[in-house]
Amino acid sequence: MTLSEQLAAMSAKAKEAEDAFHAAQTDQHTKLEEQVAKARAGAQQRNNELRERAGQAKAGASAWWRDVQQQWDSQVQQIRSKIESKREEFDADRAADEADMAEDDASFAIDLARAAIDEAEYAALEAALRREKANELVGGRR
Image (cartoon, rainbow, N blue to C red; front, side, top):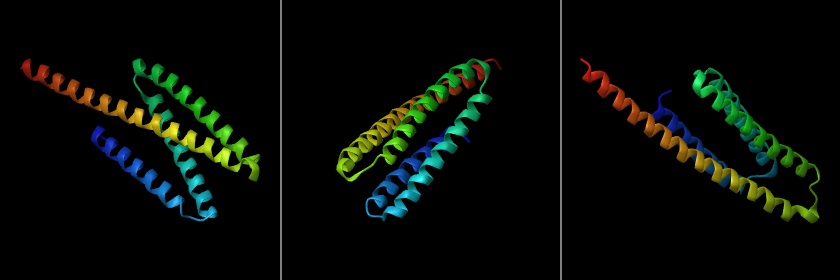
């Protein structure tokens, strides 16, 4: 997949998440639970794909990517553990507070994703610039 295709897929996924959130605000509880399960499975699949790509990365980048992946896995596990433990102790008296905390967690995850998108944009543009420079240098040798 080219960098352009990856950026387009990322944009489409962000729009899909936005649409799912808006739809979830009016959907019934059961459908919302299904959406939560689907989103979790998708996040896990993306995590697995990222781990696989990191394993295939060239030696210089792979150690760094493994560190990033381990940190990401740790953060995801902490968030999921917190979500699961809070779900189990959920009761009417604390429902609003728990919902506020869940919304704060979601807001932070969105901010983190936006930062990742900014980094992806920078990395893609830097890669394009380096490819252009490499092509210039190769063309200049002829």
